[in-house]
Image (spheres, protein in one colour):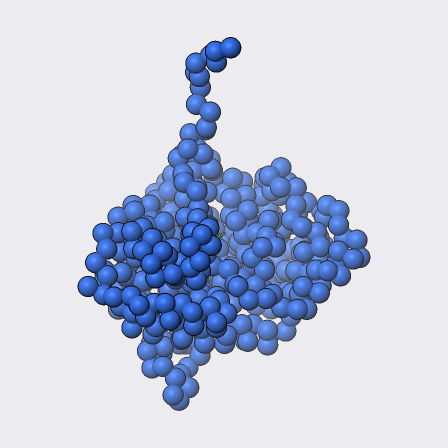
Length: 412
Ligand code: GLN
């Protein structure tokens, strides 16, 4: 029988308008070519034993059915305690928290819950690649504001940010500490952004999954002088919700993934004022019903770990950062020591490649190291055409293997 001629597009305009995740594609490429994977940001070392133990105990104790859709009571109570301790913010477990399947779901649920078609969302560029499809899926119109690499880190022009706000602006998305640049927004910058949000009655979505990964230690004798942060006292994690007048217009998006090295658990959460939380909970319920129940129980345990856990985490990542950045610089990449998160965004113009995708292919196939092409962090791909992103949340052996392979790279 002959098939009738198709009269409809089988794929929605929304789904057709974005590509697969480039970050995750690079992981598949790394596996295919046996490259050391410094692309996708996930630890290749084991998650802490006691956190794994808490998860297996929760399964054995039969916490295996749906949890309350917005999160188990013990996990929400732990989020309240931890947020009070770390950010000195009072949060109501009953009305202000939604536990989600990772911060990825938290961000899209937050946007679907608040943004109407045609409303604008301001996004700093380069941005974590999910924010672009998030805008499309929620019918938001993205307005991009460039972070430029300067001798003083990655910075935005205040006038450009101001010009991106108008009466249609619904929200701004900030990832702080920032993926992919490693920028940690200063108090002055946060206050400038906050003033714009208040002036234009805009919300702020703040992705704070790297809140514990910031580098503020002063140099010890004998350490690499280049790792010295110009003014370590300025490097502190500030949540937008801590800034005067912002608590009621901020959606904090956070997760267990990076802080506790469990990216595969997919457990995150949103903290937002009650009216917004109410809307996020509805969206979340019909998107996913809920996050994995036993892993929320383990999350309650993880969030009550003592301060020493976070101090150790920071130290470890600072050590890895101080190892990899000089290797990248010596190999010919132009980059600085990031102030936060576990990525290094590098300029590749010394290598003489037409663009980042060509260079990434070469690096994976010929040199044996996978990275993420810079263009995947930009709306305008040409802006990232001479950049790639490395991540360093990897075992020392992995970083050693990458260093050995990168030594084969030649500049032109
Ligand atoms: N946040 C990580 C990155 O930027 C992982 C992204 C993902 O694959 N969800 O690499």
